[in-house]
Length: 135
Image (cartoon, rainbow, N blue to C red; front, side, top):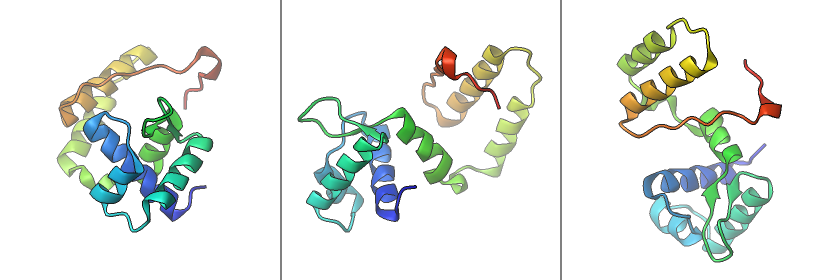
């Protein structure tokens, strides 16, 4: 489990990456997100988050980018549910209550609904064949 500082830094990295689509540096995090840690401390935490699989580093001199594991943790643990309105929740529920026979149909409905609410392009990528578990 991640400690409070790692969670705070991971959330800042993902928020910044979502906004800029550029690798995120420790200096950017300290300046833009008002983190109460030194740039060196943030660098160490970024390296640790990378080592445990929450971040990736595109190349040696780049900042960090979220990994699939990092995004999953963000959605499951860090995303603030209070940012979504009751109307949006009802809309999502109505769209997802549609009866479907194929996982592809459900995926299409989910991505279209997400795109309509966020006004962003949405892409769904299926799991690897050896990891397909439907809950």
